[in-house]
Length: 163
Image 1 (cartoon, rainbow, N blue to C red):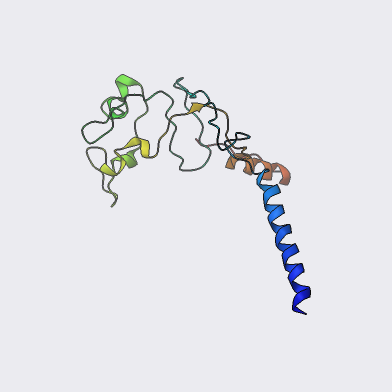
Image 2: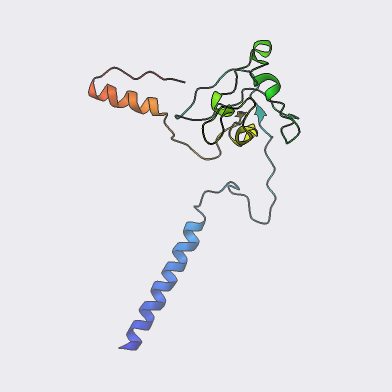
């Protein structure tokens, strides 16, 4: 009885190994078809969109994107270059949007005279937009598009975006 099970186990093990080897070639990676012992030619670094056009937000509470370059902006314990345009005192002169009032609140909800230390480092949440192709395909759909699709299916008026 034991002898008849051994060939079956060996055959199933070999079949499993062969299927792993075959499917490993089909795995999508960022290296594409570049062999592991070969260095792929790097693609050009994408340019930052520097058009100062505000982008719509894809989901509620999404931090706004930065619509300009921030190369060489100093944001550290000594200085915050962002606030030279986006602070309450500078928005009239710079015509830049003021940071949200929530950035002037501490964790207990108390308003502060200066920006909260919790919100001081802008790049923790806000990022620049690059002119780059997607590395991985993406089927993301904005929530307003989903709501409009559902309402159109039910015959109601479409929702309005509130960016």
